[in-house]
Length: 248
Image 1: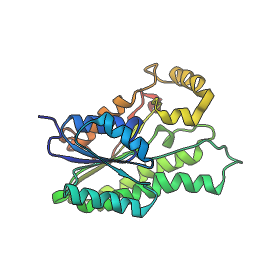
Image 2: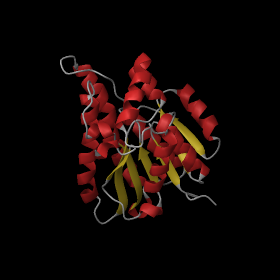
Image 3: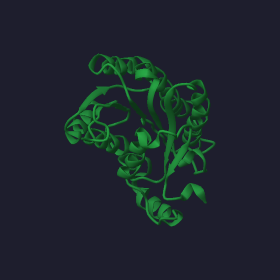
Image 4: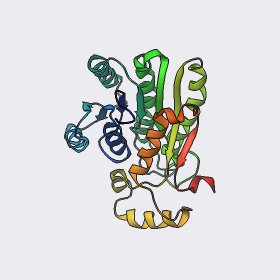
């Protein structure tokens, strides 16, 4: 019997990278996983990789009607929710002096607004006010990187949000934590850095105390820890899974 047998999990942004790795592990451990993504072709591919215990729901977390559809589907299909991994997010590079209003809104609408309403709309589905909510942060939320200020600010906002949310949820057994990855090789990096990816990764290796970049599966392991009863007294923290780079 798996660690999450009989549990229901939602993973937003579950079609690739960290989200897909976490969804695969949740399903392997017995949970029924709902994954979201904006493109149906990518959802179809992810469902095949996960194999069983999975339901896909197409949608964009920055659109409240899509979130309503997601949680209506969860309620109609399973009746409740035990684990929410609010992982969907995006980022792009623009230095100060070139930042546009469109760039700002695109980043904050998904990373901040989308995450806020993902969590808020999920709350009524947690049975007996018990469950685990994990947000995907980033080391960019605590350290600087050229041309990445808007993304970093959006991730820093998540850290501040949960400081108040754990007080709003005081008296319940719903835990909320932020998991902040460092440099993790995912398909998003190809889009972000393009032909400069190899040089970026080489520079990152030199800065990381462990001397290597991470894997999506390593982040997923930490997600499962925060979702499980093993972390039953862990609440309101930012957990860095970054090879130590945020600590120096």
